[in-house]
Image 1: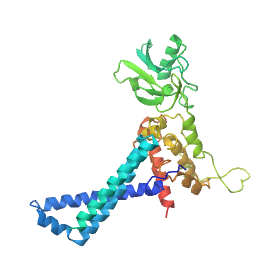
Image 2: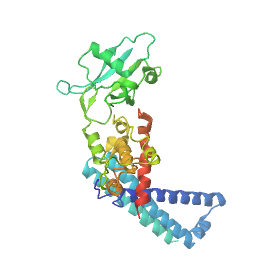
Image 3: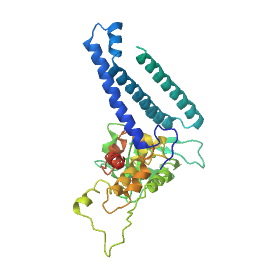
Image 4: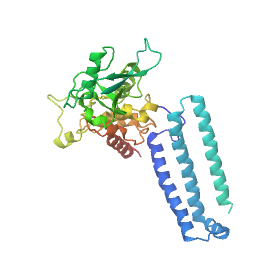
Length: 115
Length: 235
């Protein structure tokens, strides 16, 4: 058993599941947004606002944003622990990734719930 | 034929280098790579490599042959030359080189040791033997045949980057060999030892292990079975 304190869930199995479930969620959301573009060739601000003012779209978007943050962390943590062998460099890079993911989350939530 | 061999003697060389040899291949014969190495050795006795059974059983002569890992003794020249003029032989990648083509397998064996590669059974020993149904015995096919040559683990990028944490395809194939054994009673403990982000889950399904295994085994499939067992045992 290898100990790790910086991976998302402390468990390899849980991280693996989070990565796969979040990937499916991100894929369905991508298809959903592509579908919106295809169904509305003349998509303007009014249609966009009407779409995102619906409660289920807000919830769907929020869940996808959380999935995105989880997916980013599991993936980037794996890449960082593969290639960055200096502990300080790895911690700094992971910190920057964590802050960036958090900014994405807050910006996304405020954009969606601000509509 | 031109043969280029990785040379490094830490006592005399500052850094490794490739040395070329001209080897006369007997007409009409498809030699094994190990035979070619033996011909080189006749020219230059300082070239070092491991070999023993010369028939793909002992796993001593794992080498990187024209960029692909394999056993020198069962790899035909015709299989690796592929129209190339030169035969390039390097040591297995990712392990420290002791000298020329001889690598230090310590970290590889350490990972093998970690998975407890022996039968654990807490029941009293029977008078003769622990019986197993033919169906249960069949589950070990494709697992027990591993000869620990390290061709798979040393072709795996995940093992290159984390050889101290990721068990590697060879170790995981053996881990599943004991998880799948109906006579082993330590399944829960074995699985608990593997449920961290590195031991099993650092496998990214690259499948180099499958493409290089000289015995035609499939460590990626075994790793998938371990993941499924971990999932089935989780709440």
